[in-house]
Image (cartoon, rainbow, N blue to C red):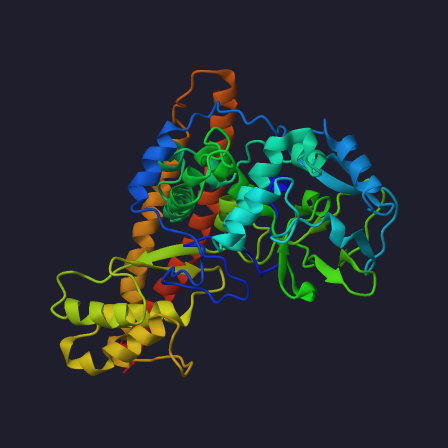
Length: 490
């Protein structure tokens, strides 16, 4: 669950709408900078693939998500491989998850872990099957799919791989949205925009796998047998990578899996993250609070919304604990607008979608880009000369950052946002009302447990997102009231 996923700090690998990006700006158009992944020809194709993948498909490696069965072997292997004596150890923590807990008192500001570079898994790691690695590098396969293939190759070797003890400790089936079926996404997340983002992510991974299968795997079946290198194993490896990769600033931006460190769970109240420490020549993190023996030690996965945490890591923080929480509000032009084509052309020129845009709403407010989009949507033909400026601002591509104000249409723009907000609220209300009596589509106790758990995750997410929308609704109504009362006074 939380332990099952790990990308630290705000410099993360994610996929489109989560393209791999490091110091990334918020991309309202959901564009894909330097992705090196191939989008599936259609989202529908990945959907059909998802439907054929059984929940009962069991990989021959890894372990149950909450299992400690391989913990001792992992710790012994790490120690034998150069990990120094630790002040933390693996144990069961809240809700049966795995985590690292303090074995001794840890002071605030203390550096811990000290994982040596020899234990990092990155694109330049040695392959147990050197020929397979050579073939992929000859084809200039990008780091992310290269690592995904590497992980499958090493996992299949089991005890013959140097990484066998580490791979045995990885979750066989994480709860990230990447591992939800299409029917589960449709059933439990129909009110949230994260559903579409999950479908897009699955489509990207499917497209990447298809590209590798066509260009490389099918031409070298002795190196990449389809019984091992298939969509099931590829989605597993991508799920591991996208949830655990660490961006190490001080190692020239190296992206790597860091065994042991990836057992750390996330806390919204912690801001510390992993990095390479040149003085100790190891990966460490500096605690920002003290820990007593037996307390769980936390790290930050970055300033992410609850939906993003569920997408990659398979958990939703406790209600009200995530100050970075947000909800995506979908907006779209009105097809009946006389200037629809002209406005659409302006949006597309700046990389925005022809269908709709999603903007993050937080308890504290909303971005200037959202207001710019609203201005563009409600602007009359007489303001056509401003369409370009509004679209540029809505796309976050405006050279001059300024708070656009068009007093003559401001009330209409605020009303448009309020209408969109209330439309989303109604969808959440409908789902939350139905969830209480929602029947689970189950044929076994295992599926029942999974269904109950996934439904609760969805309820927790939708409750937090609806709360933000209610707050936005209140602010928008108050703003309209103030604007209209000002007009009356005038």
